[in-house]
Length: 68
Image (cartoon, rainbow, N blue to C red):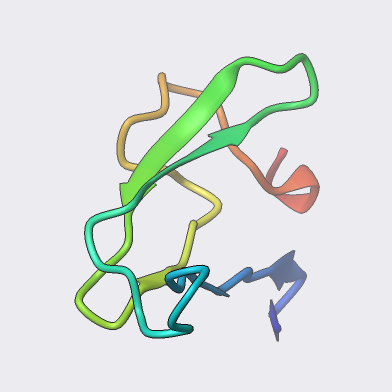
């Protein structure tokens, strides 16, 4: 999905055996150098939607190349 000139990625985390949503699963997104760029946890429906401005990213660190 694109919002303006930025991409929005939405993931649904499911249990491997049942295919049901998996709430509370930690997800870490890495930057191009392999460093943690943000941390999220799947919600009650197993949804994780990393944003361009992660809640735990250091100042100036973004995930979207268009957000430079």
